[in-house]
Image (cartoon, rainbow, N blue to C red; front, side):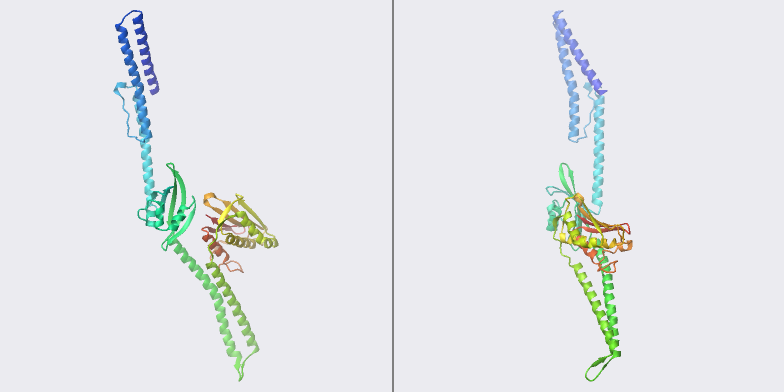
Length: 450
């Protein structure tokens, strides 16, 4: 409708100018009049100027409208020009309606931004964002409370708390998660993400202090370990103590002193021999237990290197080949992608995989499906997972909660230290070892590398 009125206005002016021109020419050349053509020429000049003003007015309004959008100035308003009449009233109305929509949209975005800022400042998780130059964009109250760094304006200010922490944070990849102990009261879990905003790349960090949870878990772990230690030690000490009392009784009842020596009855002598043998065996068991505990508490730091997963699997299969063959067990591998690599200590991870494969082989001894599957999957920024899967007898739910407790075992033989050491090694790799099991259906041990 607006465009139609604008077109009619232009055409009407052109028609009037054309009529005046032809009329002026006719009067001048045919009627040989001088005054009338002069008047018509003035009218033509006026109409031409008025038409130019008419066109420029809409162009000026359109330019103002576009400039308002470009500079996000939505306070402008468009009113009808009395000199233009009412022809552009709808144009002004349309411009004003669009400006109102922009105003409303901007107000809604500002409300959403304010809402998000309130949420960010209210949550207990620390949030920090910084750009490629290290300049801090957002830091919430939780992060300030955790880090206690005054005038925190640049990510390098993190070095005031810990230079090692700063190095770890700067080297983090998107999606990576790290654990860092700053001091006795501050143990941080930090997760990284990346985003682009305003043509800039930003890194986003979330921080949580898990010190209280760790202390609670550590206390629980020590309580569980103490129970196991007490159980194992008492199992050895109680029989030894009982045997010592029995031997003393034998010596009192079946022995006597002669002038040049000490005599003991044959039956009593045999009982003493058997008792001493039992004490020796229990002592050896106690020494074995202490050595296993020493192994658990003295795991060396991993010497990490980038290792092809296929090489890890081949090492495990090569070492276990004869044992698996003798038990008629088949082992399969699945690696996605085929050239997948993982940053780890190859010797330690090979030890974990051998332990898991041995456990799996024992689990499927009496099963029709004697297949163990070694799987590996690269998940980009989320890291890499390696799985050992079998379809054996599995692990009952009650045992699932305790199989990683040191010295806990469901086997008739074994120290119960293998899985505990395996999880400890994965913790040193800043990863995790988890298990899911449905008895007699499927059991999967998963190594997560982040």
